[in-house]
Length: 220
Length: 176
Image (cartoon, each protein chain N blue to C red):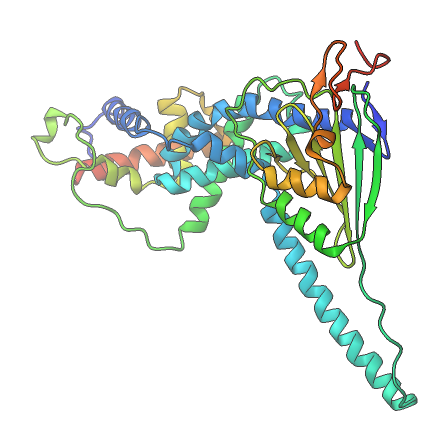
């Protein structure tokens, strides 16, 4: 039986005081950053889906292989045809943006180079949330489209200038500004020197050899 | 207008960056408010942080439509409260250790004769919807109808949660 001695107002007052104090406890320091990263990071979910997809593919392939093998052995006991090797391709496109740079559209099939670039890109750190004031990016980007047999095609776009932001699919933004290894490997893959890959930008007349000028037709 | 070459558009890239930046600027500052609300309902710092993260994830997935909403904080509150209740229902199957002793040093009502009142223990005895009603209505000042809309239930149900919560608190405080 409820105690009539404690009025509702008093219960409400002390409960409010309790909640005010409970909610006044400090929030975790990186709460906002962690929540943002969690929301924008789709790799985890994509990774799980990919794992399930690959697992299902392996099971289906194994069952199919066993079935086909059994069928061929029963019908024609001869040696099977060689299985075509899986191929990997990487298409690298340079979009000059506002700069007068020669466009690049280059396709690579060397799996070692492709794997190395893919690994470097996936290892890039996320763009720090407190990053402010990027220099001009001039709209110049490198677009790398990876096509590997049995895997979904994916694209990474890398800003050549500015904050050197890297966009991988629909996932969160990464950055390459502190990743010289990626730039050197991209240069090697394209056969370009560092000055050709990320040339200094000349805003006025200059005699510098590797200097990129703003394209007059694109200038605002 | 952006540039286009080989199927790659810099305007698309720019749009994605702007979209993420707008999301971070609009929704990010709500994280702490939502955390405090979640903490009052789930009563566990880790669970509260997880609830906030799930809320942010849902917000990002629906960002296209959420951008057009007039009252985005209210939408986020609704999602967060429902996520907290969902989490508490899931956790209910697990045994929860209720701490003994006075958890927070609050002034005791004089009519209790100086006896220990463990508000923390009393509050923990409430169900998640009851806690949500207590925190939304009694602490944050939402009306019963507004609180019911946030919880996704009828006003009558919300009143019932509130009445039972107050009755349970009274019982716990009386027997402390």
